Image 1 (spheres, rainbow, N blue to C red):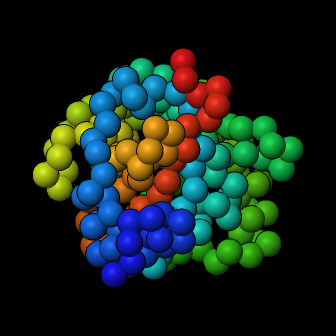
Image 2 (cartoon, rainbow, N blue to C red):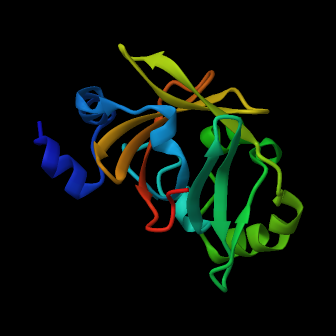
Amino acid sequence: MNTFNEIIKKGQATTEEAFSLFDQLKAVDLDYMIGKWQGSGFHTNHPMDGMLEFFDWHGKEFIDADNVHPLIFADSNGYCFKVNPGLIPMKFAVNFPLPKNAITKLLFTLINPLLRTRKSKARIRMMEYRGKISATMIYDSLPILDIFRKIDEDTLLGVMDLKGSPQPFFFVLKREKDGNQ
């Protein structure tokens, strides 16, 4: 098994290695989460590996415990926009991943105005997961929990727990420099 630092640097692992790493990390409280976070993948051979990055996922924004923007993407000009995850067929995306090609990218670009929102679409609470109580994002309209653990002062490892999905999806969040509110 790779060491903790090797796994983080590599940005990929088996699901078992990712959980081993996740379980070693410290829990975070709700106040720690407040701000803007830039996201990136942490690949574990999950069907969604690379998908968010392909569609120019930017990250998440935690305004307060009851107002979270769980999916923020960037357009071709670098402008960030918030997406309503309730309009994305997550179970389909997990079971039948879209091809990462120019046509798929164009389709997303064309439909993203329909997916945009200004309203919060999630909240955060302290919840127990794998033996630790930590900040957990709860989607408003999807059976998904995102659980967070601290890698360092400005970096989190997150795991997306989608009801009915046999494999969790891992990702990394880095606090934006102006992300603290």
